[in-house]
Amino acid sequence: MDDQKLVPTTTWTPEGETKPTISEEAVINAICTVYDPEIPVNIFELGLIYVIEIDESNNVKVEMTLTAPGCPSAQELPEMVRSAIALLRGVGTITVDTVWDPPWDPTRMSEEARLELNMFQDR
Image (cartoon, rainbow, N blue to C red; front, top):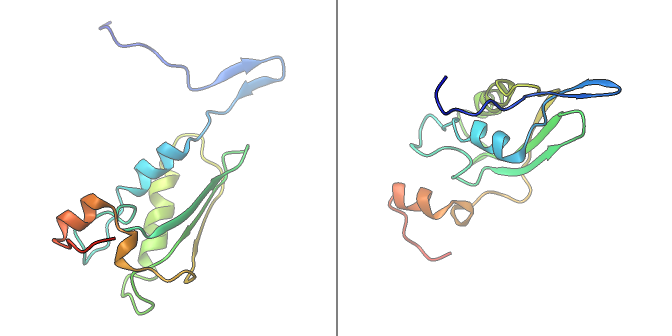
């Protein structure tokens, strides 16, 4: 075997095997694979994700918004987020809610997203 370290995904306790823990970083990395079909930047960098909550049972709740209420991907994007998170090992129930308050605006985008889209306005 190479110099790779094996990292256990579960732990044994007197009560039995524990499930792997889902981290916020893992959820964010999964969400970063989701792109709005009309914008070449992932939805996390666009600032569309408002809340990520993970409970002790690895259930994940995401609150997200869209760039506009009439977004043609309004049905598709939340399902894409749900599907991306579902690929994480050990994840429980996934809830993705679309919210409109506060409304999205370009100041929510990361610096990288603004550079990618050539939007250089001040924050």
